[in-house]
Image 1 (cartoon, rainbow, N blue to C red):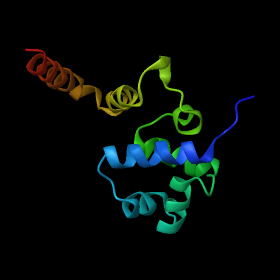
Image 2: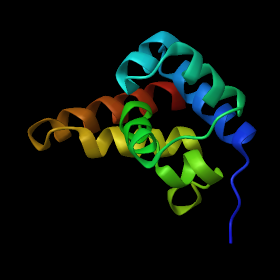
Image 3: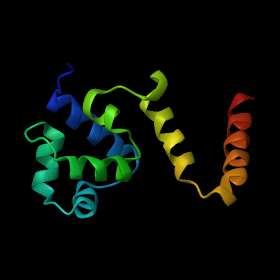
Length: 111
């Protein structure tokens, strides 16, 4: 059975929060918890309930497996997983625009 390293879990949460540009206060507000509790999660002092974990997956665009164990979908990096999850959240009528944006970006950095 897999075990949860709360310090590592908190580190993954903090890294993604910072990557997305959220303050700890913003995430705490979205989770409906105190900033201190959010800090304790990031420091690995406290764990999270299933309900809080579900909210974190939505807020941070990460899978529960990655938050809990550091394992990404299909072995991808966390950043690539975030991109996939953003794509899954994109309304279908805008998917073509998203593909064009990503393709244009990749073409511009490949040259």
